[in-house]
Each structure stands twice: as C-alpha cells, then as structure tokens.
Image (cartoon, rainbow, N blue to C red):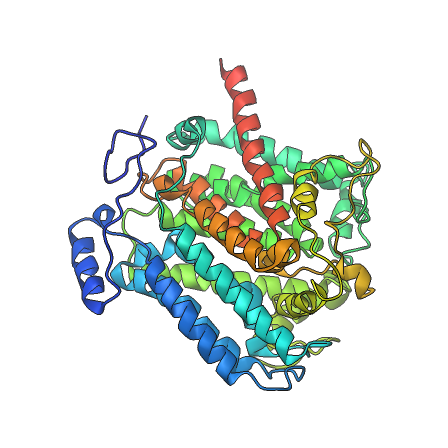
Length: 505
C-alpha cells in the first residue's frame, strides 16, 4: 500500500504541505519558480496575498468603469472584464511557477466567481432588470469581499481530513477489483431512471430525447416517495472518473475500459436529459482533473489536450441549455451541435436568442437580492444553514420541512424555475457583510482540505477524490446545498467498497 506523502513528512498521512514565505514582488515569483525546478513539494502552490491585492485593484477599476444605466445588456462588460483580470492574478501566478499548480483546489475555486458571476456580464445575454447602479455596485463589492476573505481563509494551515478517508485514498486498486465496483455503481444509478419507467427499456431510451420536464423520472420541486429514487443517481457521479481510472490501469482500447466507458456514457446520456449542466460538468470535470493529476509529469501538450476536452465540455453543456426546453428528439443531434457551435462564436440562436457562453443569471439575481435585503426584507440569519442541513431528510418523513431558507426570490419574481445567486448571495441574505466575510473565509478553509491529496503519488485513488472534491467545491459556489448533495457520491463509494469487501472476504 502506498502512503500519501507531503513535503514535511512523507510517511504521515495527515501531514501538511510546507508553506514557504511568499513575497508579492516578482523576485519572489522568480525564486519560487527556481525552487519548483528543484522540487515541487518545497514550493508554495498558491498565492493568497496576490489574490487579495488583485481583487482589490479589480474592484476599484470595476466601480470606476461602471455606468449609471446598468440595465442595458452589456452595460457591465467593461467592469466585468477588469474584475476577471483581478480574480485571475493569483491563479495565473501559480501557473507561471509551475503548470501543475494551476490545478490546486485553491486556485480553481479562486476562479469560480469568473464562471458563475462574471461571464454572463461579458457576453451580455440579458438585461439587468430591476437593478440600479447602487445594487450593481453592492454586488461587485460583496463578490470582491467574499473572494478576499476566501484567500484569507487559505493562508492558515489546512484542516485535517479524516484518517479513514485518507486510508481509502492510499489504495492502489486493481482493475479486477475496480470492474465490479463500476458495474454495481452503474446498476444502482440506472435504477433512478428504470424504476419510474417500470423497467421498460424502450421507454427509457425514448424518453431521453424528450424535454426535461416530460420524462417519466421528472418530479416536482416537493417530491414524495419518488425522492428516494433520485438519490440513486449519486452512485453514478463517479462513473466517468472510474472509467478513466480503468483506462490508466489498462489502456483506452482494452475490453474492460470500453465497458467502463460505455457505462459512463449511457449514464451521462440519461443524466443530460434532465438539463442539469452543473452535474454533467462535475462528473466530466472530475474525470478530466483525475486524468491530469494522475500524470507523473504535466507538460504543455497534456494541458492542451485538457483544454480541448474542457472546450468540448462547454460545447456539450451549451447544447444542453439550447435543447432542454424542447428535447433532443425534436431538434436533432446534428442541428443542436451546430447551433451550440454558432452560439459559442457569438451568434444568436434559439428561441431565446442566446449568444456566447451562457452560465446562469446569477449576477442579475444577486443584484436583485441585495436591493431587497435588508431594505425591504430582514436577513434570514440561521434559517439558511438549517435549510441546508435538513435537505437530505425526505419530505414524506417530515411533512413540515422548510420549503426555502426564509427568502425565495423565485416566489417574489413569480418564476417557474429556481433562481440562484451563488453562495455570495446566500451569505448576504443570511447576515450581510459579516456573513459574507465569515462565509468566504470558511470556503477558503474547505478549499485547503484536499492539500494532502494534491501531493499524493499517481496511480492511487487520491487523484480521483482530489478531482471530485475540487469539482464539488466549484459547483458548490453556485449554492452551498450543492456541496451537501454532491458529497453523496463519495458516501456511495464508501458503501459500495464496503459491501464488496464483505463479499471478497
């Protein structure tokens, strides 16, 4: 069994990477880069000081460039661009030291506001309805404040991961043991779609071409007993990563690898019908991160392959958002693919006239929320935390379980779909600036949890869990409840491996 190692104590599974004093000057970066050539593990892999300074300058420029009329589509483009540059300073500095450092959880989460909040302002796909200049300014301020608090949280020594979890990460699992796990996870995950279809395989495959709300497995926001079947899909979230693990153990064209890839592809095909781009992003993103982290050496060619895979993932998610309202069966795969490619190039396609990468309207909803709370409605205080913690309890077992965290923008706006405004907005509605600072700091502490896994040896299971934890925190930036929901997949892994270990004994 291979042990996880860190710079200070390679034999200790709970030891932490050494933090070398860092100078903000370029001389400090040159010294770090020279140190990286002698030994990666002796160099600090992220730069929170630069993150805080970059965000501060980015915010000042963004506020200076903000126009008086912010409602017009694209009005906040200049402010968003300079804010993105400020957010990217620290991760790019880490990549300059060594390309592998760009994959640190701290750096990836440091870029999360770019994806979840800033990109839509750059593309300017929609108007900032009911938002005034003060509301937009406050939104920018708390985004920057939360990010600075996040980098502050990464400065302290990492929290310890459970010893039992680290021991699981040490395993060099064989392909013979891996294949039964893949098949069991696939079987359990597909029950999520088979049970509502009464195991009618023809109906199952016909339904994946329908609109997201027309499939037999679709349910309302307040589920009953059918909510239990939803949890079965969590067993499949690791299937793409496990397929890549098999490919690394065998080869991409080995029979067992092809079987694992088919299982992952079939599951993702059904999962894509739901229109949940974030789930597809986590599943495939975690697999991509594992493939990179499991390499003994990362070079520009491998990063180029990873970049091409990431572009393909963006294209797939763009197809999903364009077709989920009517279904792939009505649009056609070829037409959907071309439409997604045209929209990513900036052309307006589809009934909504969407052009460019469309993430979500999180920045719009965040600005609307800060104008409502606390001027018109009071903070929700502890209700958001309570709502998140009780989320796993089925409503059939607790009929009076809270339906929202005490504030529902969806109800206020009479929207049919749920409206999210990222964890920044969730912190704000909880207790204003204080919650934004404390919440950002806590998220920085969570981002450092996976540090021991980053330094783990390739061919163990550590890179798989590292990739999944990182992607869980990345999608958790959209809403803190996502961190809880995506953690079910790791619980499912523990359950499956425990059951199989009993049979093997």
